[in-house]
Amino acid sequence: MKIAIIGTGYVGLVSGACFAEFGHEVTCIDKDAEKIARLQRGEIPIYEPGLDQLVHKNISAGRLIFTTEFNPGIPEAQVIFIAVGTPASRRGDGYADLTYVHDAARQLASHLQGYTVIVNKSTVPVGTARQVARIVSEVNPGADFDVASNPEFLREGAAIRDFMHPDRVVIGVDSERAQEVLKAIYRPLYLIETPFVITGIETSELIKYAANAFLATKISFINELANICEEIGADVQDVARGIGLDGRIGKKFLHAGPGYGGSCFPKDTHALLRIAQENGVACRIVESVVEVNSAQKARMARKIRKAVGGNEGGKTIAVLGLAFKPETDDLRDAPALTIISTLLEHGAIIRAHDPQAMKEAARVLDGVTFCSNPYEACEGADAVVLMTEWNEYRALDLKRIKEVMKRPVFVDLRNVYMPRMMAENGFDYYSVGRAA
Ligand code: UGA
Image 1 (tube, protein in one colour):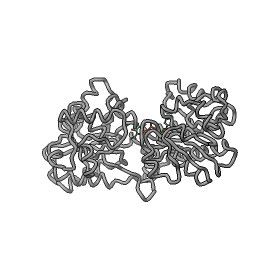
Image 2 (cartoon, protein in one colour):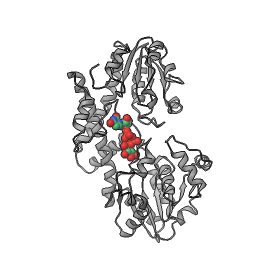
Image 3 (cartoon, protein in one colour):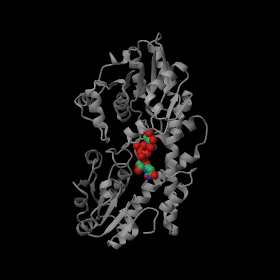
Image 4 (tube, protein in one colour):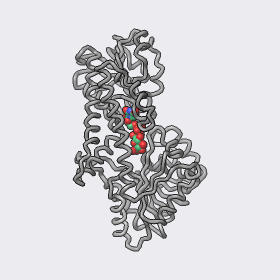
């Protein structure tokens, strides 16, 4: 089948490469000419394991094209995915900014030829698919099309695996014809018995927010439990295991840490609150989830302060990991940004390392010394903070770290190391939700 994808951001690019891998002919369109030129040369603008090989392979096979032009990709497409960004509105009011979605709808409308299914893949507020339909009909009253919602559940760092082996595919449609077309493009997933959840359009749009808000809830829940554990001398890892083995609760997303970040959970929890508010419905649980998450980041800064003796002014703190999670260079809403800013405000000297995110960090963080490896970051430090659980921080040479540090203070915000082992190695060790 012929597919067009508008927007070569994270979701658009991964989906484009994966649909091409399924054997479809995919045209990826973006108005950013420089980005398209780089993609045409096979240069991938984001760090995502396995993506470059997949893009190269499918460009060579002639199934994946990058262009700034709507013609001929849009008129030829049977399915058009809108995968443009939906950033939080600049008004800071929790709304998603739909300008790019509306622009894409307006631009594609005049190029439509023959029956086309227009699919929202961007995370959008309930009602957006209908807005897209209205815009397309206004611009091109004769167009033969249906709109659909097909939210994406990819995790950064595991996006290709998630696309190829999803837990489910959610499709929101109100026409049999569109449903058949969408099932056809996902046929390879049918063959591996992936469950398909076919719903109305509004339901599908809400499922995306519900999924992310629920996962964020699990994280805030375990983070609060971690705080209780610290006070009563319990171990949050054991609590998580003890409850997670109950199949009704599930083991995943119960890792206590510095709070969730990224481009999805913070934005989507706020957007869900906005949807509830606009419809006059309370959403108190998600409200608390958001509050708990910002309190957790503040608590982590206090934990570091305590670890360096109650005042970080003039102290050198090494930070290992800046990205909001491993295997990505994404710094959006990363807990590291908030925590480092608080430490800097209180006069700390920050030396940081991250395997992928330092270029972006240098753009957004002032007054931080970036180091080429974790050991260099630890030189002369009064404490080291493990912020992101990159694999390369899981087996640090502790002896070497201790030798280069001014004081052997280790604050492990991801519970990567074992308290006993750290004590044996001579560290003053702090973690999250476990006896120090
Ligand atoms: C999340 C969802 O997991 C995806 O299913 C969804 O498609 C995506 O948002 C999206 O809406 O596009 P992502 O933001 O890439 O994916 O990252 P996650 O792996 O979910 O992690 C989010 C944050 O939660 C990270 O800061 C991570 O460190 C934190 N986290 C996660 C915890 O603190 N504890 C956990 O147990 C799990």
